Figure 1 (cartoon, protein in one colour):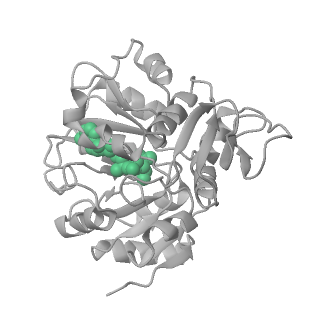
Figure 2 (figure 1 turned 135 degrees about the horizontal axis):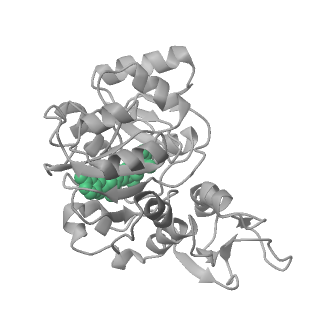
Length: 322
Ligand code: TXA
Ligand code: MG
């Protein structure tokens, strides 16, 4: 049976409605400052199984758990001073910490049966208010079909998952626009597993030491990271200098007058934060046009530009390389 998917503004009444759905093991599209999540109660196998099925996500790819505050998040893991320091500076916000799991009530499906868990405290007001209504964390992957571009608005979630969930809470555009940075603290060496808004150098400054470079053995720990994501349907060509015939153009900076439509700029003033916020939205717009592919201009590889380039690189992989 097909569900009717409602989009409701995230006011108090609708947040209470969403909390009732979650308590009853239903799955809800939820705004966060990074991207929209597909949320379910983290302590319930039935709800978690539904998330995996809706996304068509392999069960060996664990989910991130979202908490109302740092105390609750840290309580569910074995933490040390590094976690306390990072939580103090970056929570609430776009940082996910992986550590050994302590809470025995978390669904083993959510953690893909690992002895570690990924936790974060989101900053977005709507999900915060929602979490305040609940006495369990929300497990939420990005609310897209598996391998596709993450949604940064309620409308994007609707396009991805119409008929599959009862409710999408509309909290406006995600302010960051890229998924959280994932930092692994489960071992002695600190490793950034996924780049995001919080950069490796931000983390190095807080922890006061140099981070390990990402190492492929980590891929066994989080299989999801080894698979290519963020795929529009159209081929993506990165570090492009010029538009080829019938290609859409995604610029970083101003668009020269000889470039033809469809052409969009991630940021006319070359602001990397603005580019991050626009990336998924603009890839979605270009993907919907009658073009043969999307050419993307080079984006500087510093700060959040590292995360942008990571997503663009994965988006540019050809289908047979995925
Ligand atoms: O910003 C975000 O992180 C968004 C919003 C909704 O919070 N969520 C998100 O979830 O991007 P998802 O499922 O698309 O990505 C979660 C990543 C996956 O690559 C998964 O492998 C990794 O987190 N992960 C989860 N648990 C892990 C663990 N115990 N160890 C290592 N990686 C883990
Ligand atoms: Mg995702």
